[in-house]
Image (cartoon, rainbow, N blue to C red; front, side, top):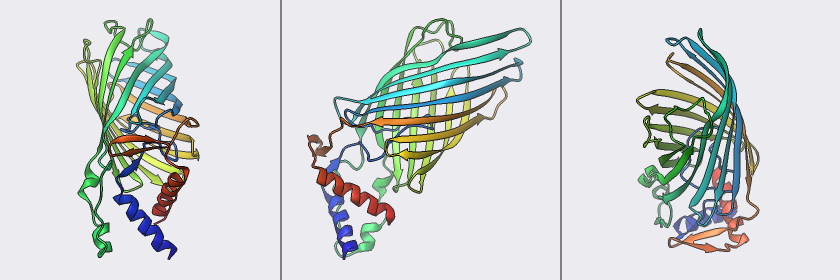
Amino acid sequence: MRNLKTKVLGLLLLTSGISFAQHTDEINTNRPGKSFGAFSVGKNVIQAETGVYYIKEKHKLLDYDAKGFGLDLTARYGALLEQLEFIAEMQYQTDKYSSPYLDENRNGFKQLTVGAKYLFYDPWKNYKEKVNVYSWKANKKFKWRKLLPAVGFYAGANFNVGDNPYTFPTDPKFSPKVMVLLQNHFGEKTVLTTNLIADKFITDYPTYGYILTLSRAVGEQWSVFFENQGYMSDWYSDSIIRGGAAYLLKKNMQLDASIGTNFKDTPSILGAAIGFSWRFDKNYKPIEIKDGKETKGATKGKKAEMEKQKRNDEVK
């Protein structure tokens, strides 16, 4: 009987016109992949995603190699609207560059970007699913709506700071970056994230690319991912694959590790990283989105009821 009540409650929640906001019970981080998800961290939520990495490059034709380490840091803050998030990214690298004609120690910002993303479309928002009270099979059949992705858009600016060995001398101090963010959920454990990118498109060397990230939960605390990133410009084009895993340390903390490589020798690239993500959500207030509008002050009881239903669904 208790299980039957749980199923009935689940059906009622599915048919409701009220959906809860993007803040999740457990941290939702972009690491260890490089793609951006379409959803924000939640209004008044602060999230830090950081890691250290090792990088090795070797160019067969130019006869050089470079080895070094770097630090990644991404700060995310949800503000103003539940669907809006502000993002600051920093990547600082130090390495040793060696060739027959030159040996030097390099260091500088490989990336310094500030921007914002907004969720424009959620296929399940305000969707009322009709329930067939006579057929359990009809309620469980495949729904084409599951193939529709959530759609977000990112706009930001790259900053070129100081005498940087990782940028072109002609690069301006400021250049734009935009991305289309797509996110598909196939069941409760598998997520496909797609990013379509136009970077530095007003400079002499614009770059266009994509990132495809497929991640899957394994148990309650582990997840694995596989990723393909491609980019193209007049100066350099490449395709990189990555794989790795993440471990949920606490509901607001995650550890991760990854490794990646390409398939060419001009140059060949090998990278490995370990990271940590942390979320501060003490200032977050549950928000309901009803008929497309935010409703503050969702009751704790209703939130707990949703969390309980989510756990029951995962067990099934």
